Length: 364
Image (cartoon, rainbow, N blue to C red; front, side):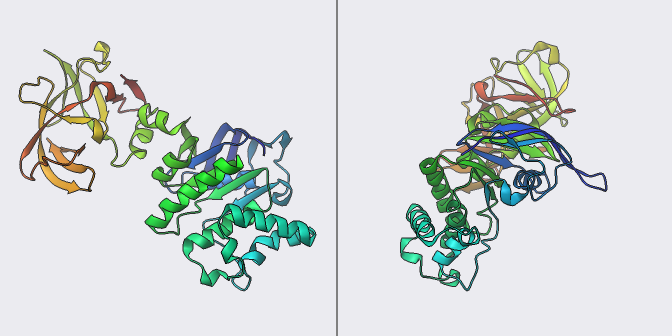
């Protein structure tokens, strides 16, 4: 395996559109790194640049110790798994797995050994004589992974490989990919628009928007310490609650919303007196909105709009003035729609953002 180094990698199209605006990071040897972001953010373009399928406008790309900017895709020693399975329907599983190795001119004994090894790792042993039409979606995706695996490349590139599967199969395949990575210790770059996939698979995550990298960190660091409002609201389901208003301090900190509603904020949330009177955005994740008692000075009452029980927890959709909130509560004493619910923000989990730049100002 090998590390992948990107130094100010840019992609600018002839019409002037910037697909990737100066990406710089390193994928460590044996690391599973995830590129995540909404459609059109540049993540697949960046992956295709690593693969050699998209020309690099400027910057330097290294795989191992070799600069590969001008190296043909077939000579980069990478293997790519695409969104579509791209299996040959007239070939058996074994023939699909062996096809790229035959093109390389590898001898039959070596091919058979690699196919057998990949089939064992991916639990395809009993399916080798079947054709793709006889397989489930999850099995076909495992064959697509196997075709990459038999090549024993330096780097695996996976472009939204689970997007064609239903929710249950996707969850199962996430586990299989994570297990495969642990077993192989392979260098992998994985592209997805699904933040759940990114959080559960990535050892580190690169969050992208409009061709630019917003933040690179471990999944929990991104979740707990987002660098800006985009990262904060993109990662997490339900998304982080964000209230916009004026920060005021009288007997304690409060956020004054446009309609006059005042939302008390925790005294020990790390708020700076220099922001008094400023327009700010305050974020709290749904699980950090806690039920409050009647005498709690930092509590506020919100109108209960819709209640969504999902088994182990309940999502309560609320209205606070003209702004919406979601609280994630344990099942049990579920509030009824049309009533009010008293809540308080967990002081250790209050995020403050600059409404102009979206940058995080503090997090206690």
